[in-house]
Length: 247
Length: 363
Image (cartoon, rainbow over all chains, first blue to last red; front, side, top):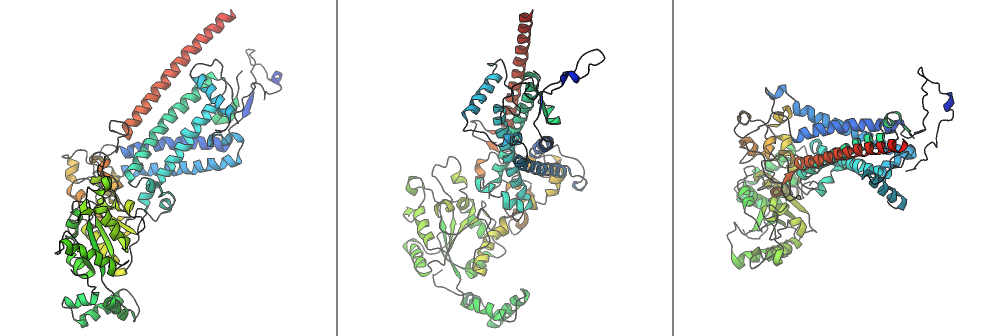
């Protein structure tokens, strides 16, 4: 993991074979590494979509839309919003679980977001380097095939821990409607041993949403910025799976 | 109300019911329960020999609203519960005896019915200053509670006070009022929360224990499942308006007159476990939501400390000033957004500067 790469390590051999285009400009062959396997990418985009749906519908459950006119029997606005929330929540839970399972099967990059190597001094040194890079104190960024150490720390807390918290509290709240004999309540009812009043669980679930909002903002900004500044592909890597180094 | 143990049969006879009617009742009960031919005589035997359950009812730091509710029970009538089903040996608020005579009943019950009586507690003990904030019979209430709990079969914690702490335990809780289950840890405790609990729920719990000779099934929080397994919201008659997205937006608007959902007005029905929306109050006449006011969540833990009864989102006080999750979240997201924008701007400026430097350097 966190393999700082010497640029050009994995360079395609036969650059000369690439033909020049009509204006005589030669295509440049660049070193690429296959990082994100298909299940990782699929999980990423499904989770991203689910989280957006969950945020919008979740906010609307806490702060509902203005009252609709007409008979109650002709409308089901809250019902549909809640359905979308519960459906997206269960999709997220399934793909989050799939992602955890893939960490056991996939390449070593797929395990990165599930732990922080707290015991390794070198890791924290490189975290510090990354912090200095973001604080404009370092001139040159280091290159990594997978997540850089700071990104790994952020992904572990901002995504893995927060989403796990949201899934657990979410299912606990869902179990209230399903009843205390439901499997959801058997599996997640212990949340109410920590917060006996479910009003508190609602509040924490709500705060968790805002924590994820800030994570998403930082995540997207960092991805775009690194794509430009670190001379390596970030955004397209999550589509193709390949990371390209541009130096 | 002596401490002498009466059987159900002797109570029934005392109320003027003939032995013939008594046996008819037993046969009918056995038949309607679908039991075998021997069951009628077994039921008769049980009622003739089983002593009524002795109950000691004590009052700690409380407002007596539980007793007020209890005496208004309609199904069963409280007179049936108190005079026929249980043997209410001690209740300092409504008993005739007083002083030493009254206190002597406690010792007598402990000695005579060791491990067999039910201890019903209304209110809770304050623990601060050695318990001096609630003195009962010259001693701190907490001592009396511990003494009587020692030999009890089980404890009923009446109301939000005994179950959760209620208003006297609200922040900052100067007397350190403490719910029963935090003081007595070695006895089965049935929590019957509510401020007060519904009368029929109270007598229902008592009826269950006397009829079956065991405690009802409890949920994770120690509340009887038969009354506390669903939220007000789950059985609310205004629920269709919630699902439709039809809410009262202001107290005097058209929606309020039409009886739409009170969710936006801070109704705590979605987070409150109680039987109000099914059993209702005053013999099934009404309940808060039916009379146009949201549920305040009085049977929930710490309901005094969750901000206004009229806010949808709970107040969070850890940030000095009271804010709800959305206000905190938006400030956080705004701050992060500003930081991101500033960082992006600095990055762009730096990059331009570096490029110019490189160009200067190269030329």
